[in-house]
Length: 493
Ligand SMILES: Nc1ncnc2c1ncn2[C@@H]1O[C@H](COP(=O)(O)OP(=O)(O)OP(=O)(O)O)[C@@H](O)[C@H]1O
Ligand SMILES: *[C@@H]1O[C@H](CO)[C@@H](O)[C@H](O)[C@H]1NC(C)=O
Ligand SMILES: *[C@@H]1O[C@H](CO)[C@@H](O)[C@H](O)[C@H]1NC(C)=O
Ligand SMILES: *[C@@H]1O[C@H](CO)[C@@H](O)[C@H](O)[C@H]1NC(C)=O
Ligand SMILES: *[C@@H]1O[C@H](CO)[C@@H](O)[C@H](O)[C@H]1NC(C)=O
Ligand SMILES: *[C@@H]1O[C@H](CO)[C@@H](O)[C@H](O)[C@H]1NC(C)=O
Ligand SMILES: *[C@@H]1O[C@H](CO)[C@@H](O)[C@H](O)[C@H]1NC(C)=O
Ligand SMILES: [Mg+2]
Image (cartoon, rainbow, N blue to C red; front, side, top):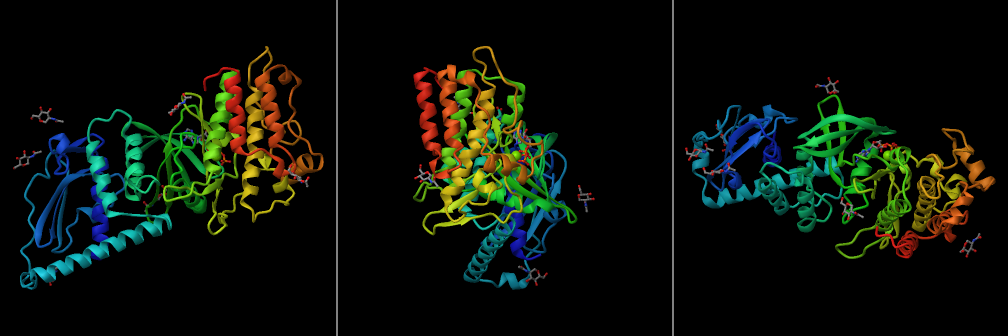
């Protein structure tokens, strides 16, 4: 184990410790925690370390979480550079740990040599950190020491009994002060490793979704098996695109991979929405006209943000979703939506005019595939094609919502699009026959014509479904149209 690994581990530990102090349990001395009388609480262990920095002994006292950490490594002293101690009774880390007396060779070192050694060490540590992070999490990690320190401060600031707002504020502050792409990766890991998963809330093609708690706050954890590493990696990567955060896109919190030697568990942590997916919601509930417009407007607002390219340093690439459907949209407490499941998304770099198609065996959901995807006539070289395919899927989602709109006495049961035209698990061929050859689309009931809002929604759907993809509406156009109905119908949404 080189000094790089030791120090990378140490940095990880301090952050982990800081996050762990947000939970309760064992009480320990904590030098960073001025807000809590220099004490912290943990489910893990109290930790004390002394290390040589610039020829001076630097003492760290804090809490550490034992959840997933390899305690052996972090509690063991490393020769004569660092001495560490883990202990398990209240305030047991408030002692005076001493480094072994330095060997003669160290004594003869002058200040200059020491500075050089320390500088080199710092570089090695930084590089090791970078490499570790890049190896695990991909190429876009903009890791900054300042940011790391800032997050330590943030974490210790929140070292108070929490009231359920910690994550939101943490993410909010980090996106203002940081790179705009969310929490630093070490903090993500720290959070992920202190989550208690509670129960399965759903199962998709790629693993299970769990409801979990992080220090009392609700979180959703999507657990992929190592077989689906690509899906996990891609989704984490897209969610961490700069400036992606939007109230109608699922709030991403953390990605983590846990490896116990024989088995890798891949985690994606996000906000938890207890109402579940739009699919679940529509099965359970009907909506009013205002409710329908609110759902539809929030979805298209999320899609506008996703599709939009923002240029400049605080910008974002244009992104197409490629798997839009009612199961991949979540319903929040106040019945607005958040678009989820970005594992298939493609980003567009307008400067290079390149589209990064993910190396992912997964294809979109057949039922929601646009005619040009089904008959393979889509021009994959043009990014607009991907956006247009999303719009087609959006039209189908709108149809599902509008059916559940209770107005004029009649309500239809919730159904998936084409439920009456294809078998329950349709093949590509089944879909192609119906959508491309027969040119069928979901049926728009006559009764919709009698109500202005439903009539307009019906028209919007048709304009999303054109076989000629260039004739379809854009997300922005749809957003304006729905906002317009809201004004006309005097709905505040
Ligand atoms: N953040 C979340 N909060 C609450 N429930 C969620 C969250 N994410 C997912 N779920 C629930 O878990 C279910 C499974 O989600 P998942 O994305 O794994 O699969 P899916 O969308 O049903 O299918 P597919 O694999 O085709 O995307 C969802 O349908 C939803 O009910
Ligand atoms: C730790 O020890 C110091 C000095 O021995 C003492 O002043 C301080 O109150 C102790 N801190 C805690 C949290 O017990
Ligand atoms: C810190 O100590 C002071 C006085 O000892 C006490 O009044 C205060 O409640 C303590 N705060 C915390 C967060 O424990
Ligand atoms: C650690 O101690 C050994 C002898 O015990 C010495 O040879 C070595 O140089 C020391 N390393 C550092 C970094 O001080
Ligand atoms: C790793 O985790 C898997 C699945 O939880 C378990 O079956 C296996 O025994 C674990 N291996 C070790 C070395 O802990
Ligand atoms: C819904 O709640 C979110 C926060 O979860 C808030 O930002 C948004 O303004 C709310 N929207 C409406 C229409 O109430
Ligand atoms: C598709 O629609 C666009 C815009 O309405 C139109 O210009 C174009 O000619 C149409 N293409 C075909 C093949 O119909
Ligand atoms: Mg999904």
